[in-house]
Image (cartoon, rainbow, N blue to C red; front, side):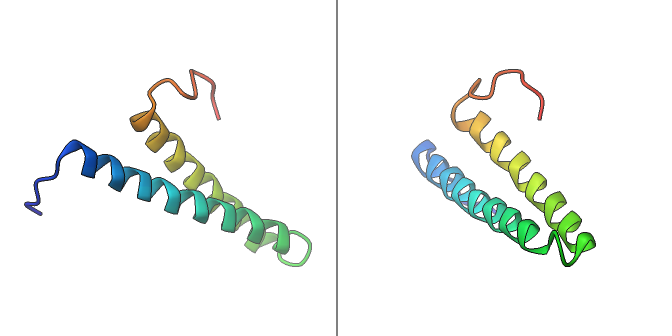
Length: 74
């Protein structure tokens, strides 16, 4: 990949990635709630995936707004 982008374009790409990760995190949390009673294994898998997307969100937030989450642990 040899594309050169300016800082505004980079920020837009990060914001799009963050919006996508937020949507996925929400979808996996919803799926977890839906599966909780009928499919415990599926619910656990959905929980793991939602936590992974939550981690991605935290990283992208830290890039865009350093210190937003402080030093708290997830």
